Amino acid sequence: MKWALLIVIGLIVLALLPPVLTGRGRSRFDTAVDTDTLRQAVTTAAPQVCSEQPLDWSATPGFTRGEYLRVGQDCADPSRPGAHVWIAQFESADARDTALVNAEAVYRRPIGTAITWSDGPFIVVVDGDQDPAVVAQVRGALARLGAQ
Amino acid sequence: MSSVETYTATKKVLGADSLALMTVAATDSLRNMPSMAVQGWSSVSWYLLGTLLFLIPSALVAAELATGWPLPGGVYAWVREAFGERAGFVGVWCEWVENVVWFPSISIFVGTSFAYAISPSLASNKYFLLAVELVVFWVLTAVNLGGLRASSLLQRFGVILGTMVPQVALLLLLVAWLVQGMPLQLTFSRQALRPELNSGTLPLVSTVIMLFAGMEITGYHANETRDPKRDYPRAIFIGATIIFVFSVLSTLAIALVVPVSQLSLSSGLMQAFAAFLVPFGLGWMLPIFAVAAGLGACATLTTWMLGPAKGLSVAARDGHLPPYFGHHNANDVPDKTLVLQTIVGSLFLILGTLLPSVNASYWIFSALTTEVLATMYIFMFVTALRLRYTRPDLQRAYTVPGGRAGIWVVCGAGILACVFVLIIGILPPGQAQGQWSYSVMMLLGYLLLLSPPFLLRRFREPGWQSEERVAAELA
Image 1 (tube, each protein chain N blue to C red):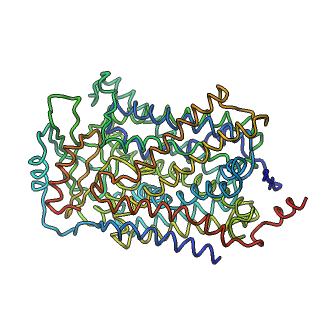
Image 2 (image 1 turned 30 degrees about the horizontal axis):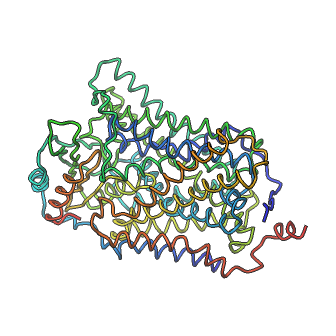
Image 3 (image 1 turned 180 degrees about the vertical axis):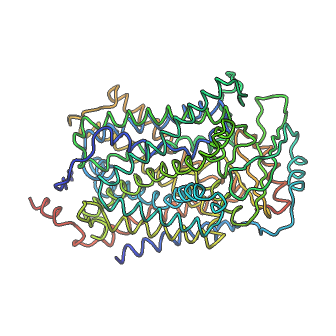
């Protein structure tokens, strides 16, 4: 029993290590930010905006509205990927955090390509075929906005 | 030391069909398909890459080891044969600890699916979700405590209704979609099949490798299998074929019908189901699909809860862990280990719900355990290689074809794939770009997660060995 307890404590300590060492948290839900601010940050940072559509995540609990953006170095060349960016707004902090956890951790053995941020009531996700330079520009733009 | 057979008078309840479904339950998953569908046609190439580098090697090696050494303990018993008990314990520890940390993430998926079926609005209430997750987690533990017959029934039921039926339904809906001439989101070209390989997409190679983890899971139930030498190869190859075919076709179905812009990475499966069902006026079926997805994930969770726990219990009976871990109930299930892992998983779920920083960083911890799992697979491949040299005359009902060259090619591919996963996992991903503390944390965490077998070895006591084991050694 003593060893079982030690193993439980050890695993819990390990679980608490990542937040301590990487200092990662969620953005405050009441942070003042809107879709246009996020959209503009991404479109200004990226070399080209290839497509832009409203998001319909009606089956995602708590989703209210959002935008999908496809940005890239050269939209005319389909062999050159850029980045898929989803910006989704949620009605509550719980809904936003549930959506984030699903995106981050639900997939099996998650060393994946997806990158997620929280900013106020929004989550921003980048995934799919991606050009590291374009993703770096998007990351920089979101960091300047204070997205976490 | 040669293997000490610790067979007990166990009921032989598993045949090839049960083992094949168990393999599918452990590996095939609807959850990953929306994220793979984002890749479009190139998802086929990504799947092929994972299949060549990992699914085929791990299936071939698992079949050879399971038929050559159909002993209780699975990975533990195989590695023990090649490198001794200590290495065997490290191997099974890697698989067990990875799963203990992963249980919360699959529980979250089960909880979200069931909560969605009850009421989509409740699926974003974190306390309601936590309650559903904990109830499901403990109910599945109770089912496993009822013995392999009970858990095998749940696996069959769950994997057929929750994984295979929804996938077949997706394919039928795709056919209806094509027949009605509705718009497709992908245009085929050879260029579109080519996967984009760059520093940004390298982690996807790790993802497609680890998507196929689980071929070895049936090895833990050797002493409950009717005819291991006949049933294992059949089960593993049937399972691997189902996994590959269903994964590729279901992912393509989603990619062909759902525009990338509408693929939700947060609630991807429900969103994909909705995209198929609503145009046919079948939106009312969404809660049914949600329940099915939850059932499929229950089958996965049940499979992973029991297998590695049984391997650990065999290691405990050999004296590597305190008797607590080797204790079996009347149904021949390691009851205390099962309860312990459920307590740990529940604590993670509660901490993740109550502490936002833990919630935000859980994925890092989860990625860390992927490293440990890759280490276990390296043990497995190296074991198969070594046993070809140290036990060449032992009759195996199945051997990897091609003689020694064949086993080197197969194990070499598997080892390379796992080493790649280890390296990629330590580098800061896009999520933590530039944060070298991430790499430090990963290395530190990796060493910490691997340390218990060595610490336990140092402090082990003679009384930890089971009476059967002591008697076997004396005999």
